[in-house]
Length: 124
Length: 253
Image 1 (tube, each protein chain N blue to C red):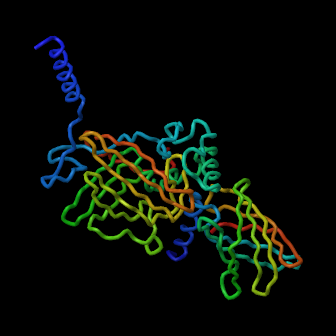
Image 2: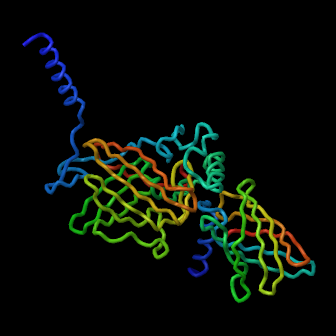
Image 3: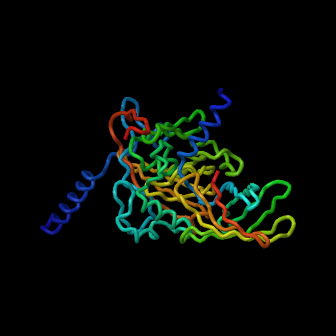
C-alpha cells in the first residue's frame, strides 16, 4: 500500500508547486496520436545557461543534443530546430501557457520531415 | 575671555552634548572584542522589523506596497538589471497578484527573502565549532548555518541545492560577510517575485552598527537571471522579548 501511496502523494504535491526559475528549465513530455491511431511520445530536456537554451530531444540511444532553442518572453514563444539521429530536420514552434504553474504547458506545431502535427508538452 | 570666545565654547559644548544625546548605545561585544549579534546574558531580544518589503537595487527610486507589489508596474525594469526573460516573469508575477507565490503553499521564503520576512531572526555565535547559526521565526521557523572555519564555499553543482544555500563566512572588521551558493529554484527570492536560477550566489554583509540596529546588505550574482551583480540593503531592529511561535498552515488563511 505504501508503495502505491508514496508516488501518488508526490504527484499530488507536485501539482501544487509553483514555477520559480527559468520557465523552460527541466523535462517536458509531449504525446500525440498519428492519423493511423498510433501514439508517439516526445521528450525534451531543456536548460538555460544564461546565454542559450540547450538540451536533448528524446534522451537515450536515439537522443539528439541541441543548442539553438529560442525563447521570446513576449508571449513566451519558443522555437527549436534540431535533426533526428537519422538526419531528418525537425522544427518546433510553440508557446508556454500556465506560466506560473509547475506543470505548465508548452503547446505548438511539430514539423518533422514532410509531416507536421500539434503537440502539447507538459513540464514534469 | 571675551563674549565671542564664550559663545564659541558654548556652541562646542552644545554640539558635543547633542552628539552624546543622539548616539545610540554601542553594539555589545564578547571579551575578545568580537561583536555580539545576539543577546548579552540575561537579556531577551531578537532582530525584526525589516525596513523593506521587497528587494530593489540600491539607489533605485521605486515604491512598493507592504506585499512587495510595485505601485507603478512601469518601474519594473528599475528594480534590478534583469535579463529579458526575468523581467517578463517578474512583471507576470506582479500583475497576477502573486497568485503562484510559493509562500501561499507554505514553501519557505528562501534567501534573501527570509531576511525581509517579519517574525524574528537571531544569530547564535558558536565559537567552539566556528559556526554562526541563524534562527528564524518568520516563514517556517527555519535555521541556517554559516561556517566560519575558513573552508571554501561549496561548488554549486556538487551539492544538494537548498532554500537557504550553503554559506561560509568571515569577519571583515566588525562586519560578518557570508557567501552562499547551492540554491534550489523552488522559492521566490523576494516578496515582489524576483526570479533566480541555480547559478545564484549571494554575498551578505551583516553589521551591528549599534545595540539597536543591524545593517544588512546583499549582493545578488546570478548571470542566468541578471545582466550583472547588484546590491540591495535594509536594516533590522533589536526587538525586546522572544521570537513568537508561528507555523505556516495552508487552507487557514
